Length: 333
Image (cartoon, rainbow, N blue to C red):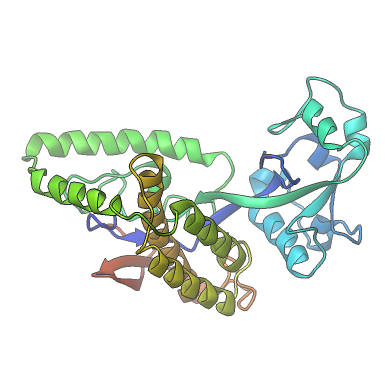
């Protein structure tokens, strides 16, 4: 939405993944932490200790090693040592010592027992968690687009290439206050422009979306997009996988020209799909351009961090095309 209004984006290649989430069939993707992680073992199908194998030593994992552990787990999966996209958590002995009322992150002891965690290994996998990238803005949340201010996860550049665990809520609170002050100051000093014409054009676009009697459902295409981004532009990336992701995004975009979007939830899903396709392209294009590994961005074909890439990538739209430019890290609108 910000890009459509004329704003620019930055750092869209930097997506953070949370390494420890349930991946049991039929179970919700609840985040796992606590004694089962600290005292248990994260292993592959050969029984190898994954953190030890990949040199992931800083604990707690969720605060200090999110990117490294996520990467280690997915490399094991890609090398054929996982189980249906997941690895294994062996916390049988630890869980047997626990009892009702104990919690392992978002998972209660009772639920861990129901899943079979006292008797067998449990599947876990990373999941998409936070976007360090976002709208280019100054310290007051101003984007350079009159009347548009950002705060929280919508803002890019606050965390650099990787966010330390626990900083997201702090960011939201600090920059929400700053953005509000900027907006109030600017509203007092200027005139608000009318938006009736823009609103009428948007209403017409929504009406057109709901006219089709046939087509793909938004949920079907969103599922394809999620699968594409996870497999091709997720924790571990390569030049080939990113090209494949880009091509698939264009295929899905072509299919999205024929959407079945009845008023209500389906129409909302259709609008979300159109925006998700744009964001996915921004992320893939930025990941293609950054030919190194830095922070949460890991390319298997460029595994090292390159000092020459200590800069940001800025993305904008020129018509339907996406423009990618290099810029200093201290970029402002």
